[in-house]
Image (tube, rainbow, N blue to C red; front, side, top):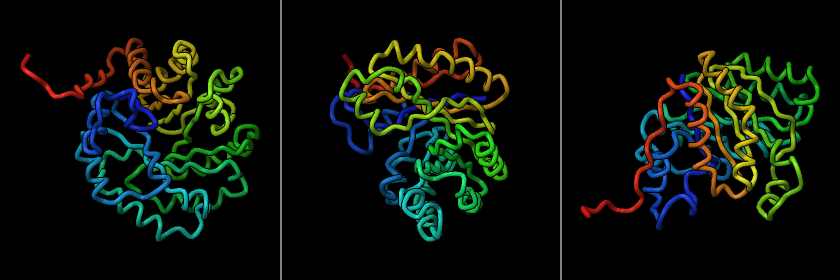
Length: 279
């Protein structure tokens, strides 16, 4: 039983003093959170040297939710992707046990009629690694039969259904340019709280107003606490419209859950971003 928390990125001007080199930013972030979304891999497969640097900056128990590249999931829609998949998995090898799951985020147009492609693709992923699927087609949330079909596909390989909770984001009109931009990009779907595996994954999106964001996650405290009591080890990612407050919010969420489940390990104490001095 363990709770991992993190953000959509490991580098943000609001979190770190001064200019950190690429070889330091992740190390500093990992001193505050114990997981991160690997969103950059959606846009380009990094070099093995870059991935080796990620591994060197993090402890073996740090967790990456690694997003599959866009050409695999969105352009080819999981069909005829063997070469691209081999190249991507090979590049990720230096992360070793830090890979929490292979994150298959599918486009909103990927519906129930393509579940055969998803089933075939999931069988191609490494048996030693977990997989996690995020769907955005409304049918999976509005049609119980479609949801059950998806759960059967995921269940055959022990994959998790990633929840992206944007209900608070869409509760009321945008109050800023950042919220307006989030409205234009994020999916508007019902909240889903069902876990399929030992390792449920939640992506929670708040608002600019920090206290409103905290109030909005109250239902999740009960859900996450129940998961932990059942012996599950959930991973929670905190998002806000500009993500400036996401890191302290992730730590606050962990603190609030730990107040309910005191046996949880505490998060690491943040490491200083400025050189230590004697005086």
